[in-house]
Length: 256
Image 1 (cartoon, rainbow, N blue to C red):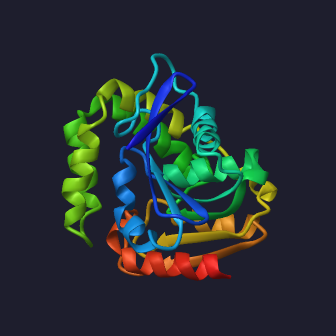
Image 2 (image 1 turned 90 degrees about the vertical axis):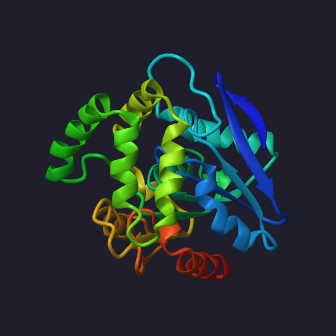
């Protein structure tokens, strides 16, 4: 694993394979290891970059409030560090939103987008306007162990191996870092900028993902060059639950 410094954060990343680059960005509270099945599948076809978002995994988080603008800036810093003019961006949940915002702010750097169980807003409907602030508050009250257990239990129904991965990922984040990260993540907003996306976009949603399934149809409607596909037997941890189906959809999309 290698590292770079971006706006006072030390970011860890891994590169495997050769060819056109695909950058994978993980979900909130997870880390680069979320993408192991994708790396194994695509390693002989592309250059694959996985990284830990600031405050996650092996990456550090500077003191003070977290600015969500730094997430996409970090991704571009990673591309600059690796001397990549363009890349395919693939992300799940938070990682999808980071990829989306990168394509909005730096359109010339993004060849295409793959957004899995991603959101484009934290205020898309009345439910989110009420629930997200409550969820933000609860992150201050719950221990990291309990938060990890609740999430791991919910997202390991289709793949029991998810439980240990999620618990291990949570254990790498301090409580203070998590509260600051989650506050920033739950304030990210992109729904009014979707018309700025001009690259081909693949939207994937697990058929049991009740957490973000309102966002994919909304993005499909507002992103002109987008394709929407449902992944069977998958919840929000879509690429972990059904990696084969996710890999097949990605390869079909890239070959278009």
